[in-house]
Length: 69
Image (cartoon, rainbow, N blue to C red; front, side):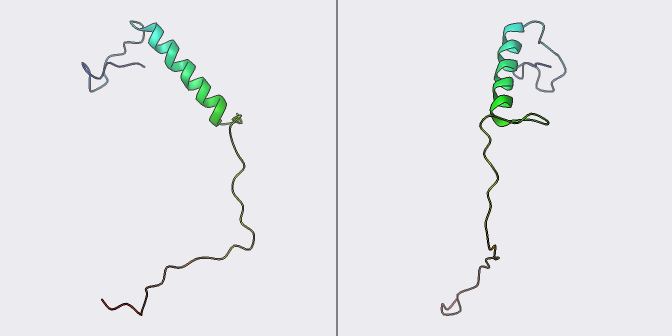
């Protein structure tokens, strides 16, 4: 569904048939993003492995008791 938000802010009217080139361009951009970032059951070519930390230890923010409030 493609909407003209300047004229139809409630998104009631689909104007995709009126603007097929816009739909084609948006679908091409979406497919490019899908290829790069991935999707369900589709690994992206720009994905990197998740980070890994060995010897993980929690870090706590402690209030500095030497400073007076």
